[in-house]
Length: 254
Image (cartoon, rainbow, N blue to C red; front, side):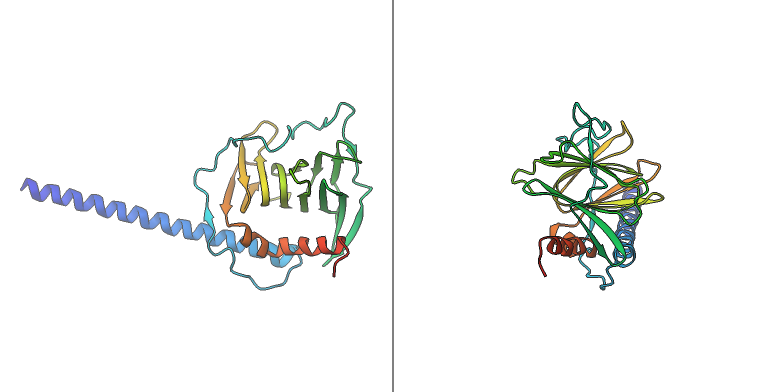
């Protein structure tokens, strides 16, 4: 009799565990599908890329336990606009070049051997770009209320850093970075090379990102996710391909 009771309890426990695992798997697949759909909509609509979905993000997985405290600080204190003793130098109205692509106007700022910054200037309300020294910047800062920002640290040691304030929080980076900012919902961050850090509010928690990851942060909360898709998948995204094409135009390519 006791043996039968024990066997019954074990069977019940096994059934509960199996049910929990199935529910978790379904939720995980649903979350991945939601992400793929959102990124596809960004690519097809707001970024001017009408190409079909490549399927490169089908293997996307949610990074478990993304740390709120990165191992190393990716940039200087982004909450402090005083980048030098004299204060930051505004450069928003003096771009190196201007590009128009699929109805979007981009202002580009270049510092050969140091960095390249391209920012959506279609609607300049609230847009601001600043550097600590125009001739040889090592730190850049931008207020991006909405739209797209593309940053490349061209130095061999990726010495130039970029701090971007979006409506959802701060993003600090060294390397190659693309941000799609929204002032009402999610802001997306793509780390193509190097490393980045997401920070919520002036003194909020931080989450680290590395090459090949996408992060998203929500306006008005600390809600965020970080997805590990790989560098190749990011390069296949329409948003990134668009900026690479603009890089070629900027360099005088076809």
